[in-house]
Length: 206
Image 1: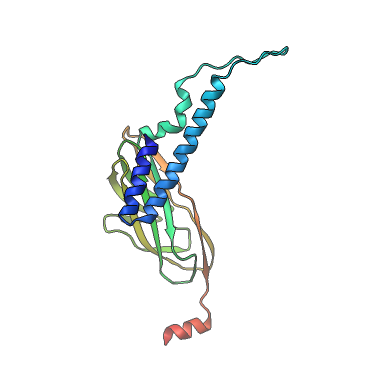
Image 2: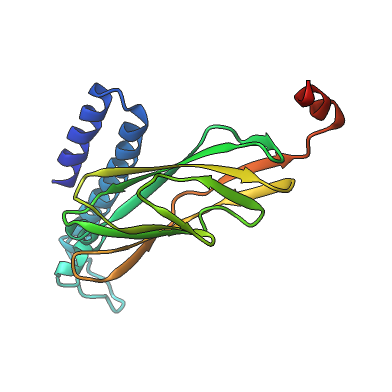
C-alpha cells in the first residue's frame, strides 16, 4: 500500500513540475521497497524446511506480528525531511538560502512543534516564513498540522558570521496522533564559509 501511494505521489509531483518533491518521495519509496524485500526474505527463512543434522539444531521460529516492525511506523504520523542548500561555498556575511522540505509519510496527522538546531553556531537566521517564529537557535512551528502524505516547505535565509566548515543538521520535533513526541534528523549538509579578501571588499564597495 505504501509503495503504491508513493509511486502515485511521485508521478503527481513530476506532472506538477516539482522534481525535488518527486525525488524525495522516490527515496521514501526505495526505503519501503527495501523493507518489503527484507520482510519477504524473513518469511522465506521462517518457512524453510528444517535441515537434518547430527548436531543440535534450532527449531524454526513461529511467525509473529513483529515481522512488520519496519512498516509499522507508517501506520502513525511519520515525518521525513530533506535539506536543500543550493550553494555549498559562501563568504562571511553573505546571505544563504536554505530550505527544509517536510513530508508526513505516515497514515495519521502530525503536529509540527519546532526545528531545533536549525543552523550551527556562527550563523544568524535572517528570514523564516511568517507563520513561524525564531526563538534562540530553533524555529517554533506552533503545532502546525501536517496531514498524511502532505508536505511543508520551510524556506529561510541565514547568514554566516565566521569562516570555517560547518555542518547543518537540524532536528524536527513533532507529536503523532497519540500525543507521543517524536523527532527526525534529515541527512546533514556541509557548507564552507570563506573570509572575503581585500579585492572582494573593494569590488563590493564599487
